[in-house]
Picture 1 (cartoon, rainbow, N blue to C red):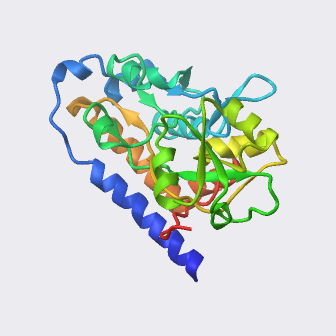
Picture 2: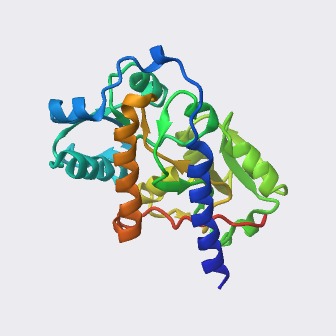
Amino acid sequence: MMRQQLQKCSAIALLNLSCWFLPCVPFSPSSFAHAADLETIRQRGHFVVAVKDNLRPLGFRNEAGELVGLEIDIARRLAEEILGDPSALVLEPVANSDRLPLLTEGDVDLVVARLTLTESRSRLVNFSVPYYLDGTTFVTRNPAIQTPQNLRGRRVAVLEGSDTIAVVRSRLPGAQMVGVTSYTEALSALEQGTADAFAADASVLTGWVQEYPEYRMLPGLWSGEALAIAMPRGLESQELRAAVNTALRRWREDGWLDERIRYWGLPAQIIFADSP
């Protein structure tokens, strides 16, 4: 019963996040002067989509060098539904710092690259309704740690300067935080026993445990961050935005989106309401 209630709360939170950020915000026409409208994209015959190529399981290269992952599936399905061909797109791998500049300069039509929906970003670009609710969780290989409650008084590695620090500090006040500068350093801290667990976003840690199966992810999320598709602002992009939102809502209703989330091993979108 409690799990069902948490799932219901998370679903409501996901919808509330999308509604909260969707209202129009004042903009400057010059900021999206190069944006292609949907008719232009149709005439061109393909989407140009910014994606990740190094973030398993959202977007990464498999052993054959092909781009795969949840966000790659979403990009291909959009091309199929809107343009009639799943191959009618150009996938552009991007660094995090380039995602919004490429979009606002008109170099890409969409960003499907683990971009969290925030109020500040919504002033620069339009967002779709969310396709995944990400958030903070933990990985460990210590058999004595089965739930986040077991982390009281233990050492938790966190990336220096990350938002995860505030989450761990507020939700797990008894934990001893160990600052690390990279995921490699976090792995080293766990291997050397200077940290008992590592806190980061569930979408990233899913790839971690897939690469290092001796580790496991603890259940539930301790924060909520909606991942959404970004596209240019402006009246000319409204038809594109409507088409993307219609597709995402239908995929959630018919189960396709949840099936792909499970296929790629991402955790259930459950936010724990109470601190451990």
